[in-house]
Image (cartoon, rainbow, N blue to C red; front, side):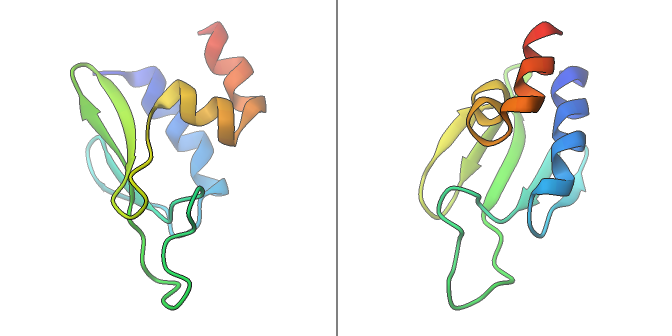
Length: 86
């Protein structure tokens, strides 16, 4: 279980549209890379989920997949600099 990843996902949540915690170690929100659907603003197909001891990101629309660190590096460099020190 990666509590550091969960902490930074929680801090990142205010920057993600339609963010919600589905259950323990499963988060859903609109993909910041493809924007999900242009027609339906309620669609949210980006997910953080637990795989092999760490949290990973996957968009079920555009197919982008990243570790939490790589997601932060690209989407929230300010949080990444703190995450990298953990």
